Image (cartoon, rainbow, N blue to C red):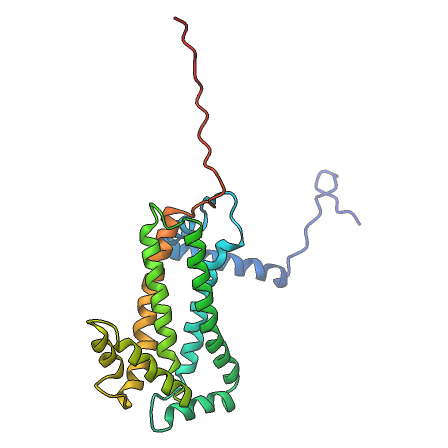
Length: 263
């Protein structure tokens, strides 16, 4: 039935009232945008994110260029799983370390899964960082102006190996115990600094109870902190200097119009 206006013409139909189910998502979206805008107005985060995410990428890149990001995600996996393992691990030589690892694998919910991710993730990270360094070397990406990025990458490679070495002792079984003794003795054969490095790792002249606590502190706090700082600096340099083009891509010179001058 049509509604007649005051002048005899049909009035415009009245739209039905919107239900709460339709307005609720829109209100939630508007509220979230308001919060984001409020934070961005005070912290100015959008400019940094825009500078980091929107970058020019050279032609010819392939999947080999993702090895650096894959290594970073492997490091994040080690950090996250390491935090969960540290909640149950006890660095004690009188059976506490070994029994805590058994408790994680046998009794803790998803403990064996998290321990496996941390254990095999260490090997994956070492393989990825070697592949990444090889790609940078063979592609010539260590040359000017990226020498500092290459030096930081070499230091990160050394720290990754050191983190794997210090973490190998933490289960404190027969294999890790004797393998660590061999590794520390090998470090002691280095000229000049070798004996001092061995004493520092052992926590004294002999392999004792202090050694496990020292390896645990180095593995959990010292090396990850240094790596996190160097990874941040490495990413900053990559964002600032950009990604190098593959060596088989020739740089094209700009076309310059040459005018002939008649004499």
